[in-house]
Length: 380
Image 1 (spheres, rainbow, N blue to C red):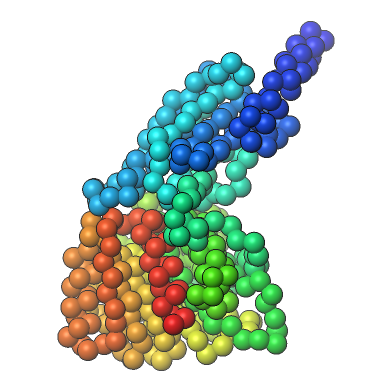
Image 2 (cartoon, rainbow, N blue to C red; image 1 turned 135 degrees about the vertical axis):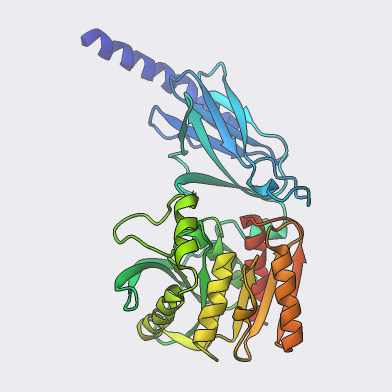
């Protein structure tokens, strides 16, 4: 036991000698723990990853295939594994190719097993997997995804759905300097079939986008309401479940409108709890767009503007009041034809609306873009 302790101490002393030198060279703030991953975004838009641990094999897995072009339907979702190699400093290193300015997700594979980067607190759940986030800057759009100087408050709370007889989780963002003497517009953001209440704040970068737009004078401070709109939430259990699980639930229950009635009850909870003005907006992505439209129809004249991002909508979701609809779709989106057809129905109904078409598919890279445009438009 004494020999084992001596060798462990000797190994830590050796690592302590060379790791700070490597950190200074690459401008990485290495924690004191022995097992520690790190990354640096280089000036040439490559990303250097480092993992220091006495393991045999290390790789980094990320959606680094993105090219910024309208190439394939699922291009944004493809991942690539990059083998990391042990360098003279004893740590594993790997550098990506030059990346298009965007937000990327990644994790490590240690001896064949998936492991998130525990030293990067910028994380996002995608179904049952946790990913880390790194942003390669360089454009006005990616600047919106970076952390601004001022931050508001995120409340993790719940509201009671009397229809379903259960509590549903919701994340509510209050802007920096939130005051009881003012009233604020409120924007409801609904996730899609594979999301949960944290999706819009994590992968959607909704809070960063809003706060940066406020700093630029393009948007006024708002309250963001991001609820769990999964069909069958499980109280006390995570809602980031498998895609198969969610699809099965949606296929059974997607037409009963219980979720939309629950969101109606959420609006009453928000209005009675926070300093909300008369300006109410709602937006959703994919199947969340259908829910947003249904909720707006259950509350005629409550929402002045409805955002439909990559929508799964039909004639039943046509507006029943004078709300303005903003419809967004990528040319390679799996529901692109659906969005175009719904836009024609809005034309025929002479409903106030605007249709925006972009490159790309059914991905967060488009939904972040749509959200930033939608926020600017509702403030014009």
